Length: 484
Ligand code: GLN
Image (cartoon, rainbow, N blue to C red):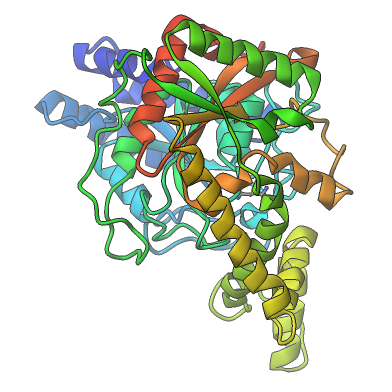
């Protein structure tokens, strides 16, 4: 049942052909069998899951269930969970049990979803392969010698391996879309400000945005509807009325204008990814969409701009990890300064240190104007390009990742190659736009390829609707990796 659609699981719960406790038990058994192969979970909360499942069964019996009541799910370990270890993939927080729930966690608890555990991730969400986790790399269920993508690779692998039907993630530069693409599932990052960042451990606050993973666009729409909404505890949370993201699922594609940015199709994509992306676009055309060429002339500047802005914000956000207020403290030190230095030197991994150094540098006197201010100007140009493109189309389609999943260890010694994995996803975060990845076929080695759909602000329902129409006509999203 765990590998069925949320609609079918919810119907079975209501028909009493399965109970929430049975579903939680099944998910926990799948994790026990499958997790040693993929390392998708940092923490499994068996007791908490069974208690939540019992409460869900009571609610189902009382007739007061919400759409997600009784559905097993997992949270990326970037979300604070009261009483449950919250590590953010770091040694720094390897002993941190949160005293409170993130807003997203409280909303899903209130909806009756059953959290079975916390998923592996790149340390502080910095990475594109999950190899930066203090808890060891997550492996891609389609080929365990390859990466699942990052930084939400644990959530993506857990869903792809059918350990849970849905999971949360966060996307600062591609961390939902890229792992969704590499693992053959659907993942959406909404408009910046849609999902509260309260209790979501900060990496780059002006870019970080929570979102949803599932087997299909329909399942993502149900999860996102339960996660989104205004939260006064996040000053960048949008004051908009709650939205039902399933509302446009049945809208036909006729009349939809899909823009293809010529810069995305010029070079860089491997041939196998290109073939799958082209075939998916042909399917959209067949379903009634019209295809127009658009241009994002400044998109090539997204990676350099991002690798100034994101580290700058990270260097500030991560200053709170000082060995006093949270997390790891060095066992031996001579004075206060030595305690800070040793605790941070021991608690952070290499990539996090690299970003703190870069960020501190670009914010320092004399370099602030040359790098930070310049990057902010590029950010505006990139956002303007999207607005010009959306004058000609309703949504933009393109690749998610230039290649299928790469081998574990293949790029881990070369940070710049790793940064280039996000070449098609990062501009979206700089502009604050919504975007999703849905399965579009398979490439080299039989590994999944995703198609990216980018919408204008608040275009989530339309994006999910388009992907749903595609998924009604195709079966890529129903394919499962062997052995799970
Ligand atoms: N790979 C990008 C980075 O390392 C994006 C990560 C993310 O979206 N959290 O920063």
